[in-house]
Length: 490
Image (cartoon, rainbow, N blue to C red):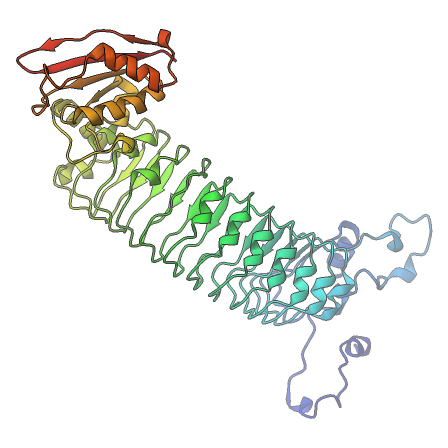
């Protein structure tokens, strides 16, 4: 007992009020655990109601075992001087309020887990653990991090979630080998731009803070696959985010976003979660790049419509549109081949009865497909179109183009039709284009000669003469319909 007291500096004259306080008892560590740790290099002291770490733990690498005098034979099976340095120390789920600076006596540590304690600070000596690869200090009461933490260049996993952190040291960019960084559920209003230097980072969690913006430098994280910025105060997302080519999962739920960011380079993005925002518009440019998307969560926003380009998402498995202002859906949504979950509750849908929605996704998709067959083939465009916003501004849809190779431009002027033909020819696809009811065009006077037109189209496109052929022209004088068939062989 005296030796233990001397290690802690426990003199009875050290504190004038010591006689009025109950003595702090050091919870002993079972000798068997220490003995096993000397062999394995691992020590687990979690859930032991520790208020401080026993001195024997910090000095396990430097002090000989208590029974060393009993075993000094060089032929003994357990030679204490051949012990393994401690590499893994777990002190989770205790009542620790601080860690001793003597942690520097464990330089071989690769894993240090002190989560779920009552730590308010970390010792500066933690920066001397130069072999540390995983540090878990989550679920404590940390208000700041020592700058020395940024010396841990071998660190790959850093768990800081559920603390009271208000700032992150700028030097965090020095942790260039980090692969997993969790800062969620703190009090951060800003994060340093030096985070962009973490080129190996694959998972980054910022959820549950007070961030109003994300630095554009984050786009330099070329290895990032998972980004969670849920429950912040974001009003916009930097456009540079679109350059994160490896991104697979993005969570932006519960923010203040009014506009959905575009992701032209995120060709591997599989999940996009932007629910509980104030997004009012979802356009073709938002959807066209998302060829790999399987989960699209848009619930609790202010969307009024869904563009036809939703049909481009052929791998889509889950679409959540709950609690928006959508009054109608593209019927050909029912043709998405992998869609297993379509959530529509809380929308003012006029074209779909509630009992159909309540039957579940498969019955709903079946109903949408049935309406495709009932829809009149001659129904016109709902609004003006332009040449390069195909196909949402024409009656023809992506599904129809991909499946039936049919686009109907029955209400467009000939100039617009010619522009769209040029665009489609460049795509080298098989088309059947129905032109009809162009009442303002005179078939005999203003319609260009069809063969001359084909010659002109051939000169304007990269399609060679042998790959473009005029199939047939039909003049139906009563209906003034022209059937043009263009064949571009791939």
